[in-house]
Amino acid sequence: MTNIKTLYTTYKGRIPRSVYWFGLVGMIVASILVSMLLVSIGLAGQGQPSIIELIVMLGFAAIAFALYIKRFHDMGKSGWFSLLLLIPIVNLAVAFFWLGFVKGTDGDNAYGADPLAGAELIATEE
Figure 1 (cartoon, rainbow, N blue to C red):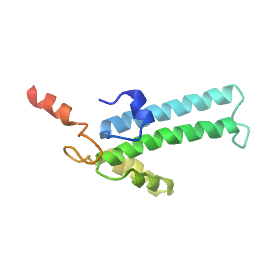
Figure 2: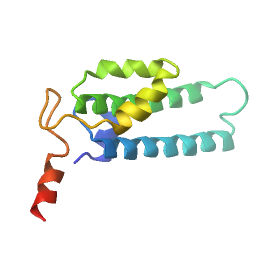
Figure 3: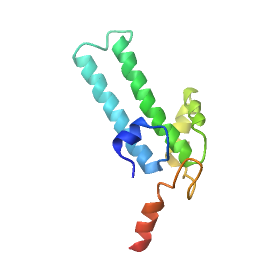
Figure 4: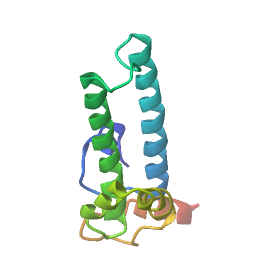
């Protein structure tokens, strides 16, 4: 099972769709809270982004790419496919539909063990 630190900070391994959605929603909530904090203390919201806002946005982009890359790995694809997310409109289809709803490869692949292998074992034992 993936822990929170590994989920948001590493680019290796695989995550299933459920963990992707959990991580994506958590990142969105955290980014909204950080944005509200920056506005409330006067470090954001004055027109052009400040240096602090840019640093925060880059941090959240790195977190997002960690999620995207691990989902692509789960489907047996290179993490370089995440560069598709830099193309407007294509990024919505890729992030929402492809990463959010396409099942990963069954069993181990070049990027690691099947993250659902243990869950399937538990389900069959009941």
